[in-house]
Length: 167
Image 1 (tube, rainbow, N blue to C red):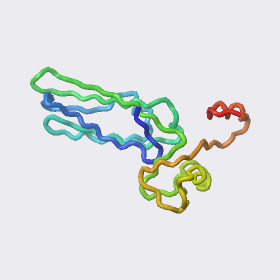
Image 2: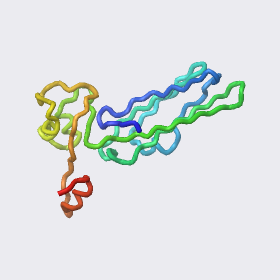
Image 3: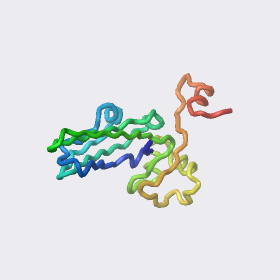
Image 4: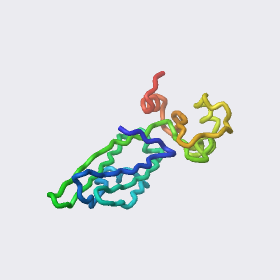
């Protein structure tokens, strides 16, 4: 299982190559995973003799955190002098709950806006951040805690079960 964080998300290039592959003619992502990954960008395949690559970029949305893993499956095929060969591989992508990976130039204010809360809430969840106006590193993971706006009709027992808490 490969962890993926809201914020930076996933930026992955898959390279397929093999000495016995004479020409990799297709690299594609199998159905089933990308449909569950809103706004995923799949770049065109890059090919050269004996190898090919394909890049996928995806920044998960808030609601996707904590869901069942997203399957990301890749198929590659070869049309060389030998019989057609294919290879397939799958990854399980798990969107981590209650954490955010900072993008270049973001501050606590940006992270708070993503979760519709205030920067003080985010700062309080991260005691290692001494200065709330301090520089955050690209890819730095910050805790955001369980952020939930209570809706009409919700009761404490339901919220405790939802977030796996106890009295």
